[in-house]
Image 1 (cartoon, rainbow, N blue to C red):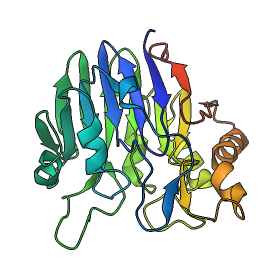
Image 2 (image 1 turned 120 degrees about the vertical axis):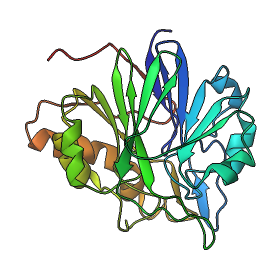
Image 3 (image 1 turned 180 degrees about the vertical axis):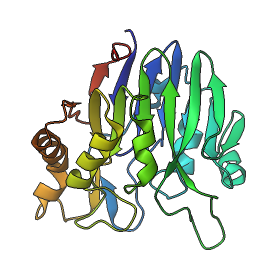
Length: 256
């Protein structure tokens, strides 16, 4: 199959690179937190065989889902922000690693570097991470997974280090709170990071029960809105809008 990434919905992305299979923020089934529902097919665990590692960006229920962790095949390592190791260990079958921004961890032939994310770190009244994180995956293609984040000045320090950026462009409802990117702010993030390719994530998957019918534009439109906002900036960034379940090849590093 070769090196590739597959968008599995919301913030769940399967990255196959340098012989390593890395999964981000697994949310495999139909989330039933209150009235929130998954509006695309669930992810079959069979598509996730031979996972090497799982990266969790923060503790919110739509990113650190213990039922999804328990459903993963094999014994992949689980990487979480510092402070979430104990709760992740309740569901993980592999080793659990806590990271802080700036920490590095080798997984096979990949080097992972934790990156700051501007987002809430609290999971519940009694459980909180030290910070939310993104991850820079350094292999033959350098991939930046932003997790959930707002804009922050240090994003510019990633310029020249990223070939493919996975950027959140929406949420799971008609409004967004602090620490999120809408399509236009995500376009600004893309300009700051300056990847060769940008892929919108965190859209088109979860929505409150009954609202998709009356607010389909907010559910279905953020990916294309992000493409248009990036194009307006004439930054030379190729935007690939993947629907849940779609893949794209990773073709190596961009030339400097």
